[in-house]
Length: 152
Image (cartoon, rainbow, N blue to C red):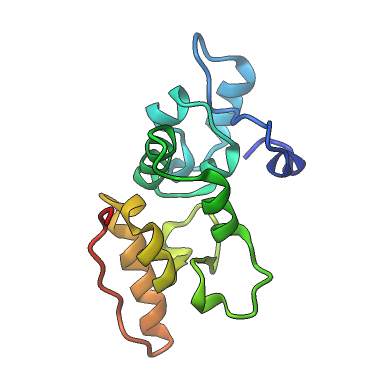
């Protein structure tokens, strides 16, 4: 993605896609090298945010997340912990995402039921996440998930 990995561990690191004014050459080079699913939306360009948000290949999910954070509906630290924390022994019991292939490929992503229960409203307008989740579940012989993706 063009930013140093150690930046993901810094609370003060700002997404390189966030800019106001004319794009800088480094940003233009970064955009040219970015897979289509990870190209920044107008919301990402306008809202100051940490770059971990930029890693999701679902543009609508990224926008919903940034707008919910800006409105005070989501604690970004809590969401980040739920998504990135992998030390729990029972991953099925807490909200989590799994990437089974290339991270920019939407078809490689799976969310567990706990994720949809807690954060499903962030996937509003992003049916691809539920569709890919169900494809992975079916491959394992598990039942499909069905969720209304709205804030309760």
